[in-house]
Length: 114
Length: 112
Image 1 (cartoon, each protein chain N blue to C red):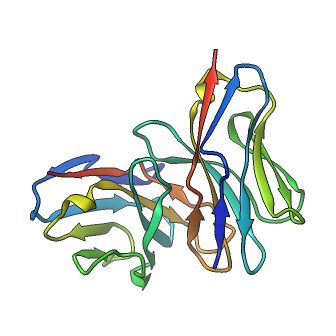
Image 2: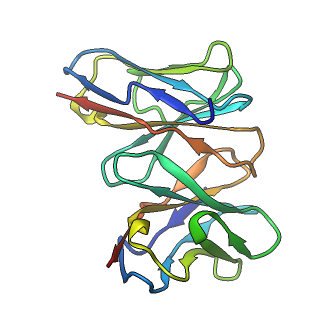
Image 3: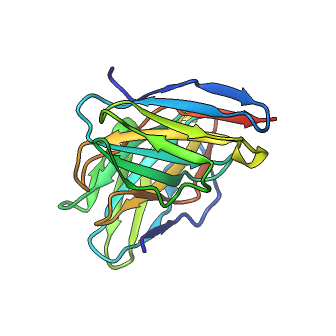
């Protein structure tokens, strides 16, 4: 596709439920990022992939959060045993490799934990 | 560690007037600076970036930004604001590291 595609766009989960958020990056983009954005705040880094390798997961808030990109393309962010504080927008982004390249964002997956 | 600061939570201007959104940065090496805009219930849209070269960068929708190394600033500007420019604006920095670090955002309201 032309842009970064994320699904689902909206997800309501009951506390304790597991959720999986999908990201389909721009074709050819080696780098893939996940960010978390709380209401009214700037995005916070969660994790980074270069192809299928997860090079940085320092931003994942707890061991309930897990991300994968097994074939170097589509990525999934999984949250186990969701808590209310997990309610946020989860943004996926991708770019070509290289610091000067633009990072393009998807529309986000809006997670509400009730 | 890299960081950016957006000193104004909100900016209000009348349509047709100049718009400025401020950003200052802190990095250990050469900065790669970006501006993004976010409309309600949407993702982040790229506006412009500074990598190297001319200090005045032109971007989408008539926006431009001026890189000032001595003041460590990268302010976003538009000569004549439109009501449709009302949105949340984020400044971000990408250092020799690969990830973007964002400011807290500035809400721009353009009144008719």
